[in-house]
Length: 153
Image (cartoon, rainbow, N blue to C red; front, side):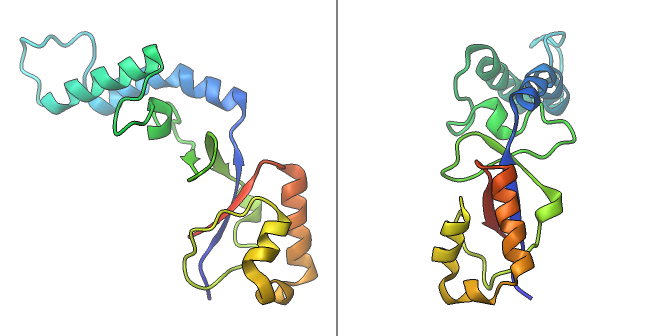
């Protein structure tokens, strides 16, 4: 059967701006702590006070907060959307559902494919087992999303 192939594109500036708008509210809701709570009162989530403060510091001052990651790398502000940082990628990516599982490969490689040429180098002889339709879908994906990537998992 093989592992899944994920086709992902970088998020747009508009999507990132939406994340920035949603982030403070989401940080508050997900850490159960906000400015209205005082440190003197009982807080059932004391560890979250620290997390809330670090995330808001990252948001306001544009500095890393948790394990060297920024608030957006941790997914705050995404809402119901799923954004992920791809290793060695620049920025956040989102899956392009219509291309998922165009083909499959054995095992679970960590390789990131950035072009059809990369795919051919990676698959070697297995590349020629892909159908014309599969290869056309790969080409179509990279035409639509030149900065897109294919990952496996």
